Length: 92
Image (cartoon, rainbow, N blue to C red; front, top):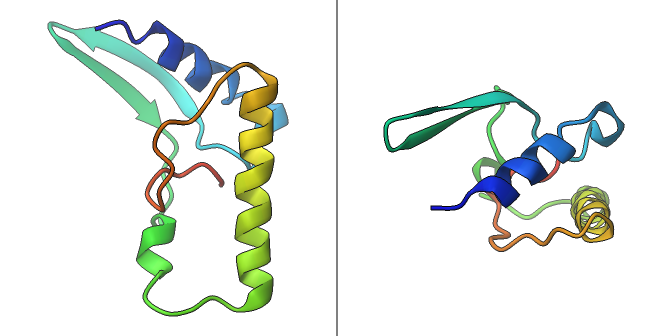
């Protein structure tokens, strides 16, 4: 499996200038047949955990802004996201 492009994206968006937009990676290593990626820990979980009730309008606006800003950064750098969902952890 060729995962070089994925690792390139992880490396690119772990830079300080993207703080608050992407989950950071502190690196990765490969074992026989497996790739391990060390990612930033979010003790409050992902967005899915909070989708048990409707968001206030302001919260929905903030979430939407973060999502669109992150996608703009990705597209501006030649990357796309193929699996947008509340567990995707685009925004920080």
